[in-house]
Length: 326
Image 1: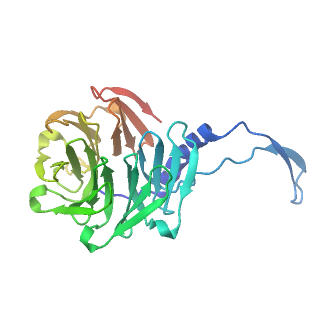
Image 2 (image 1 turned 90 degrees about the vertical axis):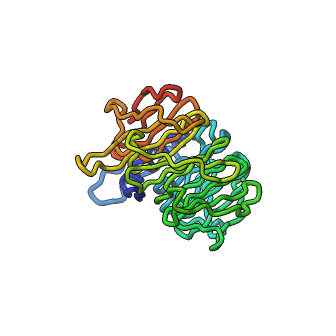
Image 3 (image 1 turned 120 degrees about the vertical axis):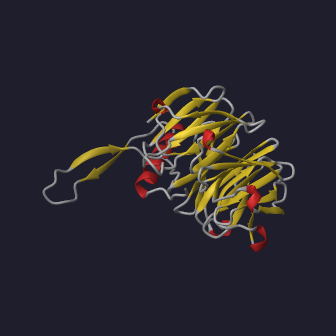
């Protein structure tokens, strides 16, 4: 189920992210003196204050993508993209301006050469150069089938964009941004597709409105349907996010049980080679509470928990809990 983060939660995420970036990027601080006490009945004193670090100006950071050199963060509320150094977390720049076409930028994906930003607010995709953040072009038009584009994934050859209200997936050429095709039809099982992940020969799409939940697998080389994965044994319910590292596929389930009223709060692991079920992780020790996003690099799996303001780290090889970060 698609949700806009609350301003309070966005602020919490932003403060945490900004603190991490600032800690990595601020040089040793020089204290300067200022004089305060301009108000009546106030004791005049001298205090010291450190100069402010450059600000990343996060504003409801909706999505993040790293290509190993750069980290790109979309800010949904102020229509900007923040670029950080992957090695240090230091701020590089905040990208903004009408020429970029940012309008409620919801998702971002970088393949190391190109950066693709899905603009949920005006049905477009912005392409940037990964090396500089300079704009290449804004892609829009009815032929692309963009309809509240909610997620984007590039594997370096193809770019896949989910259209939340169009129940479709748009495929572009990564080298040029040229339209390949719009994939739609009842056989694909698209139902408010909320997340897409492409690694190697597979494309995985999480369908957030299906009951029970489902994941659609496509062939990355052709975009043709491989299968729709569904069934009670998979534990899929309102799957909001999907991430594949080439060996494993991880899906967040944060829907509410229609009978008990409690969240499913689980992670489904599939085998990337076959789509077969590996396990459904539901244990309370993992700290899952409305898990809303997942990302795996092949060694670690990271899961954000909206209700607990926490991140759960798993071992990718086994799904075992490493720690819950609060």
